Image (cartoon, rainbow, N blue to C red; front, side, top):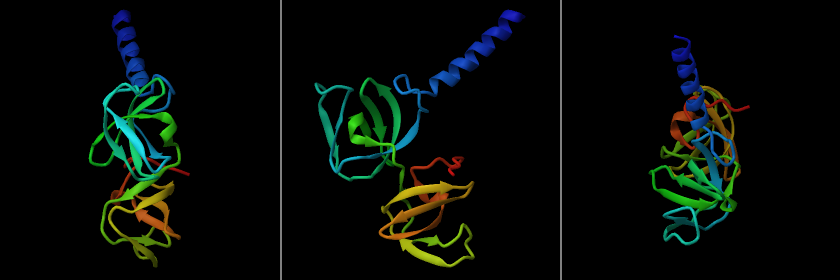
Length: 160
């Protein structure tokens, strides 16, 4: 019986370890952004692998799903991705607006004044987040948006 309990505990610890990157020990998956305005996306984690396409949008949010040496496997909101050299990525958090003419409020309350409307596809800097709201900034405008209208932040993520 003790062996069975130990085995279950060891499997639970292993599951926790599997949620961390082997290289950075940071959570997997996690969000980052493109540091550069152009970045090659490769089929595998080395310069010898074929370039499948090129990301061409600085600050675009991406999700890291795996790590290997200096390489990170990433995907965009459509699930398209591949391997990118870590030097092309930034830990600065951004989000993609997923609703056309999304209202951005002065406070995290739909009854507060609307500060701006952001178009679908706008990339915004991510600030603090509550259970349902995130503070975002883009084009000189800032305010609170419903988290459900953003890609690049987990539904249960809270940020100070």
